[in-house]
Amino acid sequence: MFEAQTALAQQMADASGELILKYFRCPVDISDKADASPVTEADKKAELLMRSMIERYFPDDGIIGEEYGRKKENAEFVWVLDPIDGTQSFVAGVPLFGTLIALLQNGKPVLGLINQPYTKERWIGVTGTRTTFNGSVIRTRRCAELQQAVLFSTADKQMFADPDDKRRFTALCDRVKTARFSTDCYGYALLAAGCADIVCEADMKLYDYAALMPIIAGAGGMMSDWEGNPLSENKGAGHILALGDPLLLPAALEALNQ
Image 1: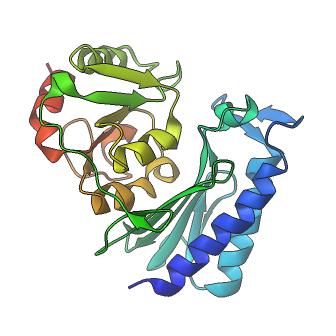
Image 2: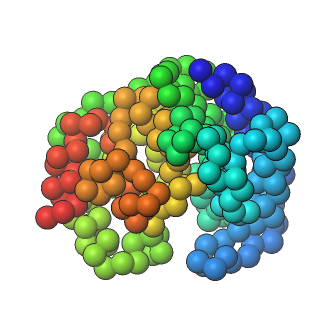
Image 3: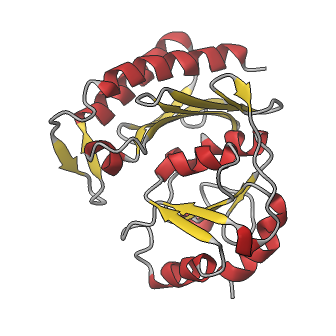
C-alpha cells in the first residue's frame, strides 16, 4: 500500500538532503520568522524542491509546508513537509535535525519519513507495515515503569513559554530516570529505534508531528496529547506525548495532570 507515494517520499528525501548538505556547517543567512524561530535559505529551497516534485508526480494532491503554507488542503491526499526540523541545531552545525515528509489520507497520517542526510539515516513508517530504519525493521523497547524511562524533548524557551506547560512538563521530568534535550525530530526517531522511552513537547504544529505518527505507531509505540487523546490539528494545542511502550501512558498522564 502507498508504494508509489513511498517511492516519491524517498526521492524527495534524497533530493532535499543533497541540497541541505550544501549549507550544513557553511556560512548561511538566517532570518527570524514571525514566531521568532529561525529560517535559512536551505529550509526554503528544500521545501520548494519537494513541492515541485509532488506537483509533478501527484498534481491532484494537496500540500502543507512549514515555509510556503497550504495548497489544496482539503484534497483526499495531502503532503505535509518540514524541510529542516531542528533549524537551530542545523545552523549550529549539530546533526540533530531532519527532513520530515508525511502523507495524509482524509486528514490521517498514513506515511511518514524522517531523513537525516548528514548521518545518512532514514526512518520510514507506513500504515499497515512495520517501521524501518535504513531498510531494517525496528521496534520500540519495553519500559512500563516511569522511573526507568529516558525522556527526550526540544525544551527551548519558546516551546514551554506558558507557565502551566512548564509546570506540567517539569513534573513529568522529575519522575523519569533521565531527561535529554535539544533533540527535535531526532528524539522521536531514536524512540522508534528503541533508544528512549518518552518524548514530551508543546507548541507543535502539524508539520512538526504528522510524519512522526506512522513511524512511532509502526514501531510499536503511540502518540497522544497530554490528556491521552488522539492527536488532532484542531485539539490539544500542539501538546505531544510519544511513548515507546504504551503501558507508560497512565503514569505519564498522571505526572502531566497532577
